[in-house]
Length: 254
Image 1: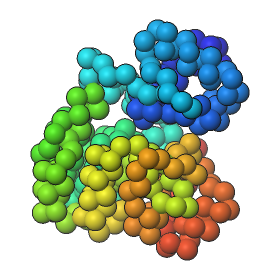
Image 2 (image 1 turned 30 degrees about the vertical axis):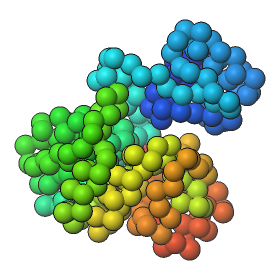
Image 3 (image 1 turned 135 degrees about the horizontal axis):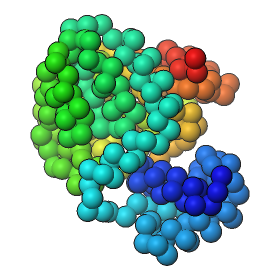
């Protein structure tokens, strides 16, 4: 991979996840930690990210909707495969809670043939859902995150408590034997409530999110019913999923 292409991908990953560690970036891009450090120095000099001890943070931007669309393209082929498997699990006339992740966003276009009642805290998801003829959409209230276009806060959580959905679609930031994690408490608390309000919780995660942890723990593995990913996890995680009665589905290439 050319350096220019790598810098673009690093920037996109950091914008999608709002933070990234040097170690994680090195693994995902198959380069050395020293290479990532040099790349992060270049991106910081270009004022595209903010370096931290051991990693980097996203910089808030004004072009809000374009930033969101751009980050949807990361690992898009894998997200599409995961999305198809998730939709195949749905019954028609179902109620679904959709979190604000881009992996969950990938499922929306496949809902077109199903009669669905959708509940979401994502403005981007709501716009896509509005185009589907057989879908009714409820947007949760709350405080708007201006770059990621989701709503969160106490109002969001209290409103969620009024619903009991057939399914919750949950995008995963990090998952390990210890549970599911995310990098911010505000979004983590909303995801936690979404899990509680879904009869069947379907977690969607590409392989890069597995065997990772984050700043805020959302829940134990036992809180989810199904994990859809694109590669078979290692033995330790497989055993943890089985012990917590989590079904595993691998979205393989055709």
